[in-house]
Image 1 (cartoon, rainbow, N blue to C red):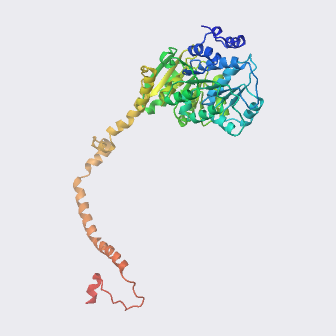
Image 2: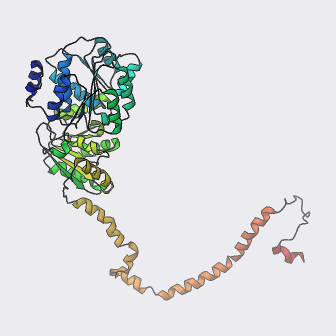
Image 3: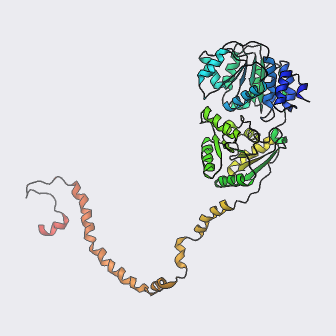
Length: 467
């Protein structure tokens, strides 16, 4: 099947062919005709299967007919992250170049003024994250009653990030008669309930997980102690024919520290995570795309929004906590027919996490055997010192002049020293008695200032003078 068989317009087909594509993926072949027929749709597909184009392409043809109105977008695409929203916007620019369509990107981390101005001019496609959209809606800067087409992308990710209440509110503000497309990697009960509530007789499409059938990605897991991670990573980056790589970590602090460590080791590395503002994230991502840096260390905020051609390797520096994140991470390589390699670092603490990943993907990930010579030697050092404590060293046979001096000191000379100490201790006995008497003086009544007026008891050590 070719794109020409899906019912797309000639102008759109030209844009697709100019982009270098002529054969649709499985999700595209099944979804595009249904969307063009104005049906609601549920698509279960992972990132990397061509899912974005499966709704962008038919939307361009649908929106080719109609008129823009100020503050009332004609269609709305909800994305969980800024990166993924920007990626969808790039797809609209690439495929809609032969159409007179206006698009606006509504995301956090950038100035709101330019976004409001674009809405005032009228837009055909509004691509937004739920938080920023709700913010502008509550300010009265946008109206949703003219939106006839809604796309909820990465619905399970929306659930993980706590956006479901916002999505329900947004759906309630849209026209009841509309077309709704929902895409998700999985279908947990909450997402199914959302679909049942807001979709009408949807067509259900599910494509195979790329993690289980993508032969373009060679997957490995590498077992190691936690302290060996950085050394193993540097070794693989130097020896595994890495041209460009994305390294994923679970925590933002790990991303920052790892990027700095790699830079200090001479690697051309950058970072992208949620604590960076949008302009900084965009700049770092553009440097990676342009080849200014060859290694990008990222948190999962970037896992579902990156589409960079030619990424040769993905490293899971941390085994992902959620198994779905594994699929999205390794999907950054082996794209568009290219081949790629994915390494997942596994420590003893990751036993449950890697088991969940292998359960999701339906098979064991091959283990990559690696000799950890340097980390192992470093770890044996303290153990050797423990086996030879300092207290045991005098038992060794002494050598040289010092040994002769030690042997000439007779043990009997220590006895007179011990006997000499005994009288000293006896002579100090009276001090103990005086110390014992001092607390008693503290509890006696105040002494009179005039002499000869004391009538109290005679202290024991003065008894001889009172007789």
